[in-house]
Length: 168
Picture 1 (tube, rainbow, N blue to C red):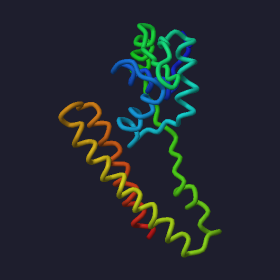
Picture 2 (cartoon, rainbow, N blue to C red):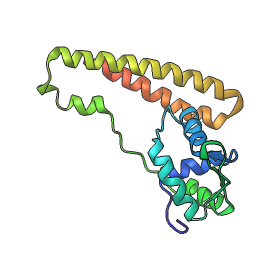
Picture 3 (cartoon, rainbow, N blue to C red):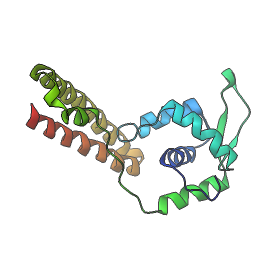
Picture 4 (tube, one colour):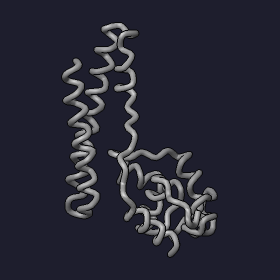
């Protein structure tokens, strides 16, 4: 991986490892807690990237612990790669929203199904908005960068709710 560009998942893992050594499970939990409202990672992505990061010399693999959990620590090369990634121009991501995708095909759905889809999505976005607002408030005192990132999640869910209200 040395010399290769980091993908977003690898970069996120390296960023999280700045906080200290973590196992794959701990990285998943921290990613869900800290990044989940605006960035998702799957368990399979985490466990696919960690060996590649180790092979590339960006993380060090610790001794297996309970239940064969293995801690990973960011290396000096990993810190440099992460810093390079942070300083690259950022491109917007591809939006993959299943409700928006289904909306493109509502001509093939019953009116009741469409109405239910929008109502369910609005409820989910309301819950996610409340969670993102709470997380932003919690982070405000301890981590201003995380709080600012949470504002993206707040704005996204507010925008989605506004869009859904126009449909419903």
